[in-house]
Image (tube, rainbow, N blue to C red; front, top):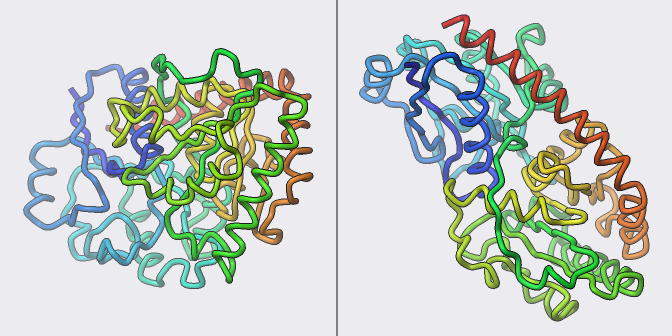
Length: 377
């Protein structure tokens, strides 16, 4: 039996819960011994000496990540400047091996603060202490190298959210839909997702998306858009009325029409995965709104300004599939978005074959990492 202290953002975000489920799945598949997990929600946990003593006494390994843990949230009051909330003097108290697992560089594009200097100091100390240190893409790796970490000790390990198993979910109004589009909108921190004036720029993107969907409806009269929130308490659904007043019954909100899936939990993560699996194309603003459909072999377009979306798409050979709003807040406007969607649909079979091969390569990289990690124990 290997007992693992599993540290990550296991809270309100469906993407991180899918990551946790997928990660536990492949760890168990690749381990020759049974595994027991002690999940630790990093955004609500301070690694104080008493907790560290408990982990030393009861666990064999600490896994930090996966997920976008390289991110400063002031509300977490983290002493490290990222989501491993531990004082430097307490890091050496941890006697069990530490594996940093597919963590991601996660600051928002329009956040001028980015990471605090203390975060790089703590990340370097964690790298020095870690048995293995991995990030989920080359974009994250390059950011940490610029911050002073040792490039020779930074591995690339795919985000395990792509391995979440799916469980059948009955979607409303899907039987007669001849084009199902999944749309994930990220509602938190809009002032960091859009340049100022952010409310005006956010509305411009919503108008462009809805215009594209209505244009496509002329070719696909049964078009159905599924609005797929990842956060509870209507944080992602804050803009729902703006979409519904433009699209009417062509768009459904899972938080309303499949309310049994909310609030998010790991027990329901497989239903979220199946939602993405059923789409003809997925358009996602969150990182895991791209990673999960990739794992479900669903053609996809990334959306928005967050670097992690571009980092992931580049990692899996889909760099051209980003509706980026970093320099164009309307992502090409309604006509440009509609053209991108048509291009994906026309190339759908080839894209699915390429994605399946990429996923196979990702799984092999994960398997190799696990083999070395467990052997080192």
